[in-house]
Image (cartoon, rainbow, N blue to C red; front, side, top):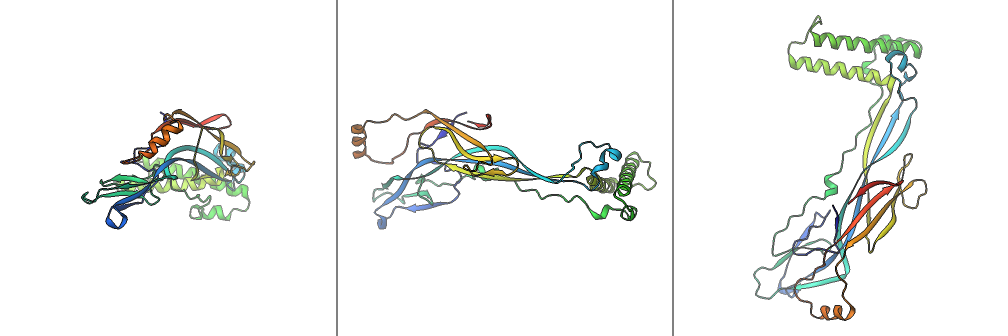
Length: 314
């Protein structure tokens, strides 16, 4: 599917992406029954999802394979970044070089128009409710890192153990006891079974949380925090390897001129343009302008890539 580039849009019903505030303007005698508006030009808003991964080694990582059979335990504290989904929307922004006044006849009944705060026309003599921005709707909540150790699951025996090796041994035994208790409850072999289904769910949940907290002491944790990075570009022609930003697994997203990251490129190619008028024809058209002035839509193909891998295509 090709992206529509607003070399423009018919202004009687103009969806402005990422615009949420509009203003109603009435054509009255005080403004000579005229409302000023600007034609839109296209800006492309690129949103990159970035995940910060924080790895925290558990205090007993050296014994993870010996006692739990885990071979991929985290062995050192580190932070790295992952570049996730790339999304793109086109947003109309005012073109200061193309600002016009739409004049209503004095006898028109309650003439009005809805404009964005920066002067783009949304509707004429019709109500307008802006849609939620596609990018805002896609925002994700950040996830708080999880603690490796929850002291409430540490038994007296574990706390009293002298060496790290002994503590790991005690913690492993505690994990196996929790697993055995859970299995006995599920199979009905426990001496004191929960009185009903809801109580059983609660007990099982508590046992699983205790097991996870103790297991983290061996395996460590990998906490993920998702954020969004936004960059806006206003294209005036085709783009070839335009650097939007750079990305580094160690630093995350960095500026386009920061050589610490690999460049993320945008290629844009117009595939459908409105015919260009010759100067004489354009001058003639300008003198006879009446009614609502609007732009003629065009189409373009867009590709965003990094390290020769396509991240977005539309």
